[in-house]
Length: 336
Image (cartoon, rainbow, N blue to C red):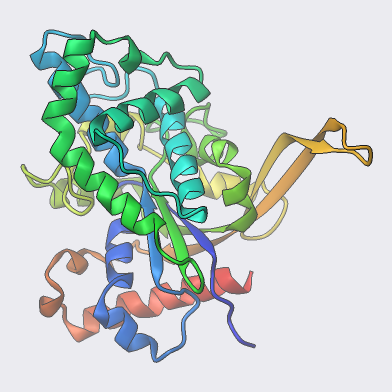
């Protein structure tokens, strides 16, 4: 049986589990050369909520320089001031995905001011105040100027992704979620993957399967410490999550719980009320249910860390191990 090409993959797992290494490997010449023309994925288009996490920190840093209170975090190495920012991040991914489906690119006068507007709009969707719109205008301009180079580079990357022809390609959406160490299940919103799935757009849920990078919370914390570099907070491969956040927000995750309670093998169940039109074209409310297929990439015995090195330094045996597990799990997902 011919394996179909996956349309959209939710690359979900705890921090430092290997998500970004898997993405990096799939973009490598090594991956393409080992495929031999057979693959459950096409060339990848990649979305990630981490750049928004980073920019939230950068905005707070700049606000502090101007004597203003933080908007997003309790402190520079602390959790979100309001945990519903996890929903803000999902709303930004929903917007990115819609831009990608519609080949939508942006050429604003200021990339940073566009970012500020997007953050406020996403916050409003989860019931948080549009705090950046309420900043004194001179402060907002100054913070924007300090971040313009970084935000312009990120916008250029997003525009390049969204401008691509999607035919034959696979979209990967990366995010990390979890709950407090020792928390009971189901996790209380807005924590965990359950809340993330509930906020994902219909367009994503209609097309997506889940590739879960499987590590223990203890291994996630170990790898998080190992990967961190002092200058790596803007990097998907080398940033380090503060330990208070690792224990309070990522001390466990609910993927196994969601699978075990979905009512269908190797899937997660998402239910919501949607508005549909009846035969006369009048709107009415209806229940809609998705069962998203889930495949596990087993990284409990580390298969991915070597990818942080330059590709020329990868050993054939290392590449073979990650390749075999990746193709195995993606093939299961495609056949589901």
